[in-house]
Amino acid sequence: MSITSAKTGATGISLALENNFMEPIASTVVGSGGASAIIFNDIPQTYKHLQIRGISNSSNASYIAAQFNGDIGTSYSNHAIYAEPGTVVGQANTSTTNVQIARSNYVAGSMYGAGICDILDYANTNKYKSTRALAGNDSNGTAGGVVFFSSGSWRSFAAITSITIFPTSPSFSQYSRFSLYGIKG
Amino acid sequence: MAAKTGTYTLIASSTLGSGAATVTFSSIPGTYTDLILVCKLLASSTANNSDGLRFQLNGDTASNYSATWLTNSGTTPVSSSESSATRGRFGNVSQTTNDVGTAIGQFLDYANTTTYKTMLGRSGNLNSNGDSNVFTAVSMWRSTAAVTQIVLSQSSNANFVTGTEFRLYGIEAAK
Image 1 (cartoon, rainbow over the protein chains, first blue to last red):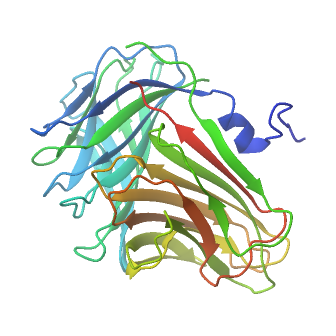
Image 2 (cartoon, rainbow over the protein chains, first blue to last red):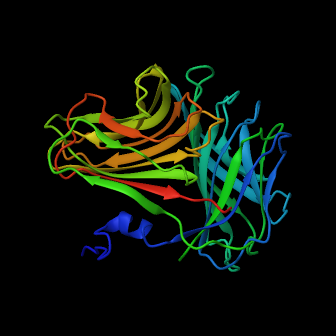
């Protein structure tokens, strides 16, 4: 069975995209002093899923990570597969203090990595929370680009009301931008 | 936080009525935060392989593009890259007649004038001749200009065939 939009003629995924299924919640651009972390607080509980979209630059960072509701304990785990030129790597981390949502090989000057992370069923109080992410950065051969997929788990039943995003070191550079969206069920 | 109503605005679409080597989206407004390009890709030849899905921005045909990607060769994962290329890459197009593939390209922060532009892409096709593949890539355009034009092509410069479809959306962040 095919469903077609009477308004635009869109079908399938195009139809879903044109149905206002996604709404912007908040957005932050890092200023001239840089920022060690980006925090989204008071997240409304009225959506089914959340999506974080952004670009960032952080010299020497290995990963960009996320924590929820201020939990800095070892309540997180994640799996990832990432590709560097000529190398494909799988990894698993259990009982860690964050979920990894991007890997950063080399971003300097005007080079910024990009990433998209979905946080699924974030307001549900009956199950642990899951994340999935796609991210990457390229450096025109300077130090090798990387494409990164990850899944993450936060072992908490609490609804997510706060998200902290941070690089492993030292801070996000100016013009890094993170935007939070709500996705309707 | 106050939510704003709606995003994912359709900027333009193109469904090919005849074969074309390139498809161009011009005069892209700078009023969104990200661009998303959704593609329905019909096979363009009878070859038993895949062709690269390519893009150029703002008419820049110089060697200002680079990419790193992950794909498969049968059951084997493969990663590769290219530097100082004349086009970016964000997917594959099946070359086996009657096959249909999909691709999604994400141009993040396309309108800012302070950073190089980074693009994430994914594609997949189930090739009936056995060369099915999934593909994901990150591409960079070494320019701080706002993106106002996207030109799509294939690595071989073969035509996109009749019925191939592209839809360009704008995503707006909260103000």
